Image 1 (tube, helix red, strand yellow):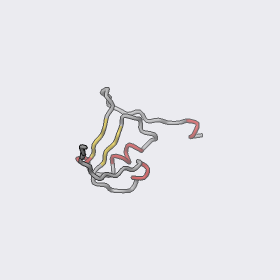
Image 2 (image 1 turned 135 degrees about the vertical axis):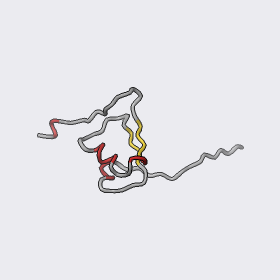
Image 3 (image 1 turned 90 degrees about the vertical axis):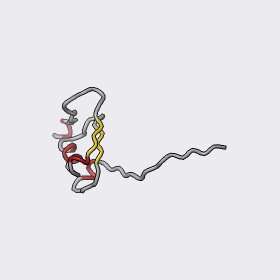
Image 4 (image 1 turned 120 degrees about the vertical axis):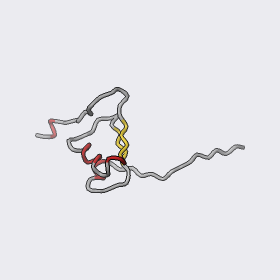
Amino acid sequence: MTRRQFPVRLAYAMTINKSQGQSVKFVGVDLRTPVFSHGQLYVALSCTSFDRITVLLPEEETDSTTNIVYPEVLL
């Protein structure tokens, strides 16, 4: 019988809405899927200092991210 061990590090995750108003040490943002509403990206990136942010970008090179808006909700 063989036993394999993998290094495990404790980590936490929360939604962008839950992080609003909080300060955290490190932030990771996955932009491979579009940001849901106006201001969410700002909230995600403003929780910590610039040098402590990690961003996952899509495979293709783009200068922007899609911001999804549902007009029927805004009525």
